[in-house]
Length: 322
Image (cartoon, rainbow, N blue to C red; front, side, top):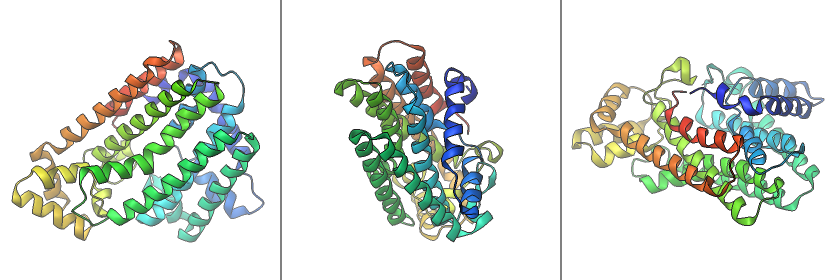
């Protein structure tokens, strides 16, 4: 299952969103334009904007405000990527050099700030207090998630609940906001709006769980990142937490040391422990359960091609290899 097929229904809408993105990226400051265009045009799944479009379509919206809101969501996401890559000292994303590797940390942080502030300018222009509340709350929680993740780095005592909290804040919250925005502009009832929010947060959690699986099993050409990046940064993701809790004393000690020290020196031994304990299969089952909860939330949504695509995203979330 490829993203291209999933996006057939909204292809022209995504082109309209890209036009808004290009227009809103304009700045008189040359470096702002260069860095922002580099990161936004460097690929990616455009998944969060697609959620706005599909959610709005599923609930009967036929205007154009969803283009602007999709661009807002993408700008917020892109800003977090710019800041993430600086914090993580990453040099590769989506198979290309990161913006901080190309332009430096200072430029990446400051252009990330530009994207956040541009997103808020666009929010205000929509002139809907509920939309502004959803997006401002999401942005604030994402920032808290970033700090939580930073606090968890190199901490081998992080448990599954703490790990999932980081995912809910840092990743799933923007999925939730994207799906909820489509419901708001679609004039949905409070119950339907909440159902779409529930869909988004479980879909986002499933996606992040699979991202963490792919960090120990993906092909670099497909994922666009180095194998073991999370380990190098000392991030205690679910595959490592599972080994710590279910592996032999020797396996747990190896993983604990790897988390606390960071780096890739112990990657072969950590991969062996992950495979031996079935940690990846466990994480995949967790992702599948989240995906199923997302699909269940759509039961209240009337049948349509848009709903079908939202359901297909649930399947893609756990079946993908990139």
